Amino acid sequence: MAKGGDGAAAPVQLPGTVVLLATFNGEAYLAEQLRSLREQRDEDWVLVVRDDLSTDRTSSILDGFAASCRPGQVVRLPDGPARLGALGNFLALLAQAPPGRRYAFCDQDDVWLPDKLLRASQALAGEAEDRPALYCARQRLVDGGLVERGLSPAFPRPASLRNALVQNIATGCTVVLNEAARQAMLATPPPAITLHDWWAYLVTTAVGGRVIVDHHPVILYRQHRANAVGAAAGGMSRALRAARRGPAIFTRRFLAHVEALLRHPDLTPEARSLLHDLSALPRAGFLGKLAALRRCGLYRQGALKRAGLYAWVVCWHLAGPAEAARAG
Image 1 (spheres, helix red, strand yellow):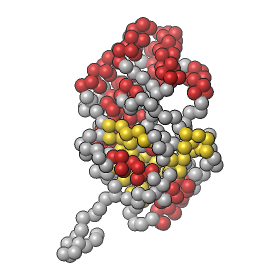
Image 2 (spheres, rainbow, N blue to C red; image 1 turned 120 degrees about the vertical axis):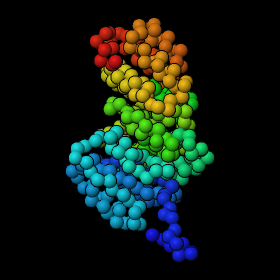
Image 3 (cartoon, rainbow, N blue to C red; image 1 turned 45 degrees about the horizontal axis):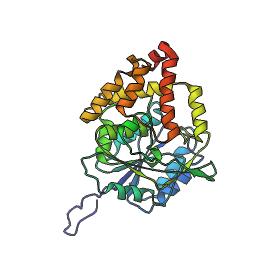
Image 4 (cartoon, helix red, strand yellow; image 1 turned 60 degrees about the vertical axis):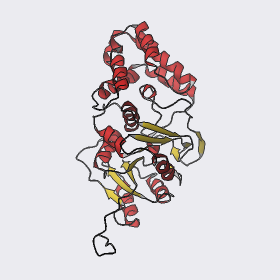
C-alpha cells in the first residue's frame, strides 16, 4: 500500500471506470478489443473479466494482456461450474464489481475508439450520485475485417420507459452506468429472455433515471456470423425477418419485461401505473390492444419501426388464442 507524506498509509484510489468484459471463445478478435482499451485517452480504468468456460485461446490471451498491464488493473473472476450465457455473465460481473464507480459493458469482438471512455465519463460527471444514469452512443458498423459499413441509426425521439418497453436503443458495448444505475439493475432479477443492455435501459427509465444518448459514434461495432447480438441490417430486411418470426418472441419478451419490472421496489408512480395498465394486454381484444397502445404512448424510433409496432398488435390478434397463451 502506498504511504502518505506523514508516513501513514494513503487510501487506495479506485479507478473511475470499471470495464466489464464477458468472454466466450473470443480468440478471433479479443486481442484487438484489448488493444483498443489500452489506447483509451481516459486511462482511469480497471478491467474485470469473467470467462464463460471458453475452449479456445481466450484465457491465454487474457493472461497475456494482464501481464502487460500494471498490477491490479486486470481482475479475473473465477469461472463457474456451468455456462451462464451473455445475460448471466454480465450480471455476475456487475454484481461482483467494486462499488461506487462507473461501469462499462465490453464485448469481446469490437474495437473501441480512443475517446469512448472519456466521452462517457464526461457525460456522466454532472449526474447526481443517487440518481441512476445510463450513457449509450452510436456505433460505426464494420465487418469482420473492420471495413466500415455505415453508422448505426440515429434516435430522434427521447429515451424513456415508453420507448424501452418496445425497443432497445442502448447498445450494450457502448453502455456506461453510474453506481445508482448498477444498484437499480441488480435490485430485481431480469427475465431470462432479455438482454443485459435492454434490462439496463428498462430499469434506468422505470426508476426515474436519466439516459444520455451520444450521437457521436464511439466504437467499431463488428458484424459477423458469431455475434451473439448484432446491429440489424436495413429497415426492410428487419421487417421481413420480424414478419417471418411472427409476434411470439416479441410478445413473450414484452410481457416478461412488464412482469419483471412490476417486482422492482423503486418504480416511479408513473411507471408502476403504466406497467399495471400494460399487464392487462393479454386479456384485451384487438381494439383494446390498439387503444392501450395509444393510451400508454408506447413508441419506437423511426417511422418504419413505429408502423411495425402496430403491425405487431395486428399479428398478435390474428395469431389467435394459442399464440396469446404462449405469449402470456
